[in-house]
Length: 163
Image 1: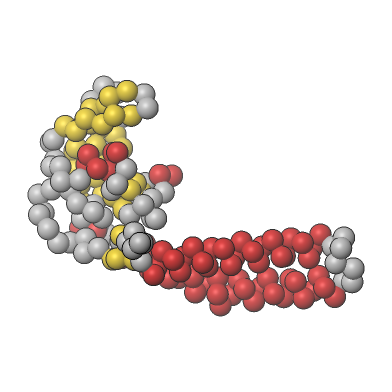
Image 2: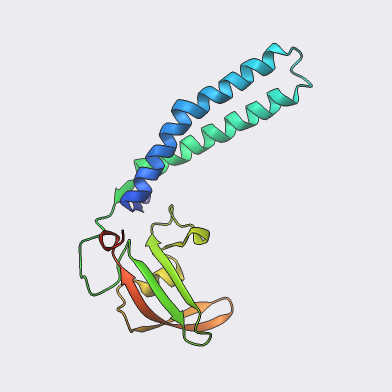
């Protein structure tokens, strides 16, 4: 079975490459040094520093494997291609709740880059799917856990327009 492609923005791809390089070049060495120092303290059976360093090493190796898997199946999307009148992958979209008038701004990214706290939502999420191919001024209806919401798209920018 073919693995799902991870669609990434160029920024997201570079960020993962940089994190992978940091983990492999610097973090592995740091943890190896911590393990070495903990071993020099003697009995490992009750050595909290050794156990903590080994746990940290496991987490680093786990993250390296995750990033390598993402990058192996990565496709960097051309964020500036396509119709300039409609919202597409990589766009930063501002929309307003029609009831509360609260405004939201999110960048549409791939699922492996999604980070709601940093204003990035997956284009595959319910909100992302409804925003895709929409236009400024259009009202989109989204089913949320709190019921049906109507949002008016007030603006969007492509990555090349942001600076």
